[in-house]
Amino acid sequence: MQRTFVHSNCLIVGLVLAFSHFAPAQNKELTADEAIPIPKVEFDAQGELKITASPNSSPNDFDFLVGKWKMHNRHLDKRLANCHDWTEFDSSDVNTKILNGAADMDTYSTTQFPGMGGKPFEGLTLRLFDPKTRLWSLYWVASNTGKIDPPVVGSFEQNGVGHFFGKDTLNGKPIIVVYRWDARNKERPVWGQAFSSDKGKTWEWNFFNVSERPKE
Image 1: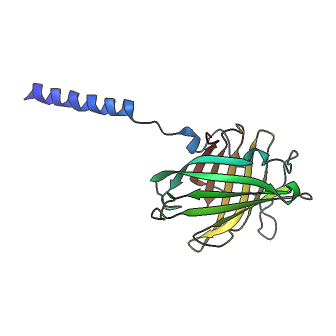
Image 2: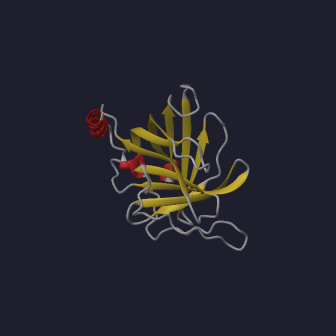
């Protein structure tokens, strides 16, 4: 019996190792890069976010997005609920500069968006550059809500990474939202979204996507 038990254990271990060898590794692009900290959130006397543009902020910062893209997404199933389950899916995106270069707009499309049951889903992002403050304001509209989300505001740093912050609510409770655009590799940019329910002391990442040019 002992020999059989040892043999069975070895077989199980072997199968586990074999499966691990062939199982795809998690795409590190679709996780938070711990080497890039989220900037500290600051508030003014009225409790509004204090956001200052970086010295190099420019109306050309999002030029790298112009054109067509295909995207791979990773979406947290539940937000601020101690959830650890993620759903991955594909989408496409088309970006255009508008308003004489003072803004850009893109349309995000997929039939795989979580919770949509395979129905077509589209989202529209409008990005506006304020020449006085030199800050970008990013507005998101989803086809299943028909509402414009409160904007997230910010700029890119010299390293090609931008953080954009805004106030919103989740299940009736106030939260802070941050978008991170990592454009260090402009041919494969990475976007991420995180929420904070404690005014930026802690963050939970809940959505990532990485983009690449479609093969014609």
